[in-house]
Image (cartoon, rainbow over all chains, first blue to last red; front, side):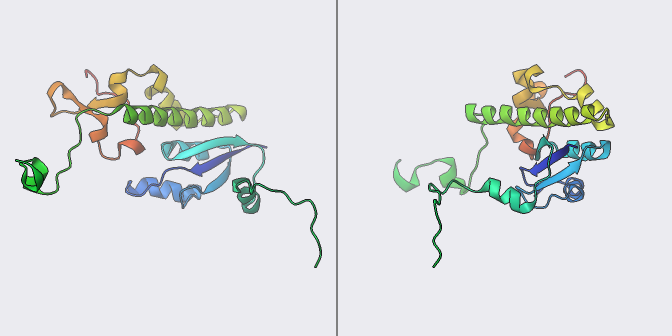
Length: 86
Length: 110
């Protein structure tokens, strides 16, 4: 099972109402937000209607919000060898 | 005359912004990147639909009507049709929302 992973890359502020509504139906509200959609013709049509604003990838797995946030984390520059109990 | 009273357009008329008639090299570079990004979105959607044996009307229309960045002439990438300009051309950067729209083709005969 694969999905469209759609990320809103450019804001639709200042664009027409229809574009904004299409983004809402895709579930995209803020810039940078990510949604996963099944691969169907209606979804593809919606993505193509806002093709200048989004970035699309084909993925096999939907990430939860927590998993997505982990992928966005920066490298702290250290790793924990052992945690001591106090 | 020098100093604050030198006779320049901004000094005489206050706030004056001018858009140059042509795009800078950096603007053109970013425009190419945006065109390529849009092509990439279309290609990915097509790939996804093909994997399911599907197609959609919007995709067929885009494939028929929207030229790819690699197929476009520089003239169409950076300028566009304008009915009141000399030679009917205008810099694309003078069009409203030009970075968020696909303006790639000309009317018939232009």
